[in-house]
Length: 198
Image (tube, rainbow, N blue to C red; front, side, top):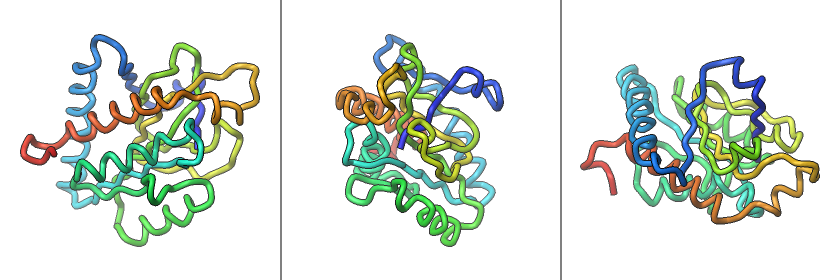
């Protein structure tokens, strides 16, 4: 659904973690982020909190398909976490509020990791950003949707320029979206013990 990152917003809460999947340090960065998230999950599980991955987006546009791709890949990896938002059953602008209500009905104080496509600067394009705090889906295309998540992943699928924001949905490369989705899934599956990985 596209969130939007600007430099001044980043200073408002915790420092984000940047992962550039095409960089030489990719595997090391994935391992570091997996360890960090694994510890967050362990603490939440010890407190009896259910872990939920909420993957937001639509499979109708390449640029917005990051969330559903990640959700389907997580299901295929058989992660032991609850996953909402897949290519088969996407979570998007029309059902996001209902999905959040369903999650809160089903679980008491769940630990929610939200995942969505994002627009950023030209330098950020092709990066995964992991940050504490809720995701603001739809902000990049000026939609007002509920913020969601204790932590969130944003895959910067494209950058902002003078084109209308809706044009980014059509001008984003599938290769970029797949590369970001694979990196996010590697990070999440990296939180599992070796015997829990498929």
